[in-house]
Amino acid sequence: MIEGNLVNLRSPEMADLERNTQWINDREVTRFLSMRYGMSQAAEEVWMKEVCAKPTSYERAFFAIETKDGVHIGNTNLFNAQAADQKCELGIMIGDKTCWSQGYGADALRTLVMFGFDEMNMNRIQLFVFDFNERAQACYRKVGFVDEGRRREALFTEGAYHDVLLMSVLRDEWQRPA
Ligand SMILES: CC(C)(COP(=O)(O)OP(=O)(O)OC[C@H]1O[C@@H](n2cnc3c(N)ncnc32)[C@H](O)[C@@H]1OP(=O)(O)O)[C@@H](O)C(=O)NCCC(=O)NCCS
Image 1 (cartoon, rainbow, N blue to C red):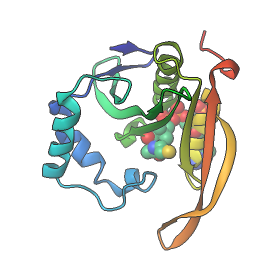
Image 2: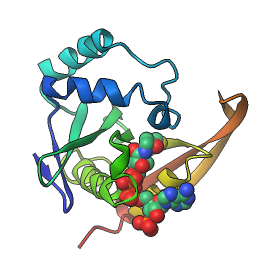
Image 3: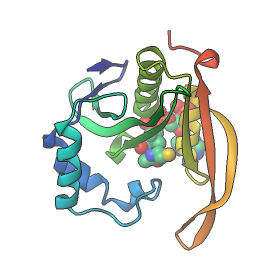
Image 4: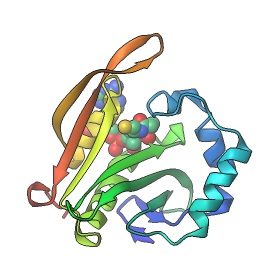
């Protein structure tokens, strides 16, 4: 368990299956993710069994996000870790929409970024975010990610092309939470 101020990050459990299936089939959530087709519970179960069977590790740093009351509200992960470059990518989904814009995402990100820098020896953590996902961009900037690039019309969704932004944070520039 990794403790933040508003949330804790814990290992995923099979008990999370139904919630995860619900979230990844909710278009209001998945319109912000690279996940346009949805997923059956059976397919999600196969994926989760694989994730839960192995210890959380450098290669697969996947965490469930829980409030301090122990309510599972989403997931976050560091992936594509490349040891030679000390860099990786970050993903996050607060699947419970009633929890959006209350600071949970920023706290989960600060907690995960600090873990990435201090425990996994990352030097750079990057992410991609759709141009219309203004909440996520505001959240990432608040945490310390800086705009780095724009992949023009890299995404086609909802009948139109959209740009995809690249953001990153470096260990030396990161303002640690007090
Ligand atoms: C993106 C996400 C992780 C952010 O977590 P969160 O808990 O909602 O975010 P926070 O409350 O920490 O921060 C959001 C900030 O955006 C602001 N915000 C909300 N809607 C906004 C909008 N339409 N435009 C600009 N800013 C907005 C909030 O006011 C808040 O800033 P503040 O704290 O300065 O007031 C979460 O909303 C989520 O998982 N959404 C669905 C999936 C997703 O988008 N994942 C990321 C894919 S790259």
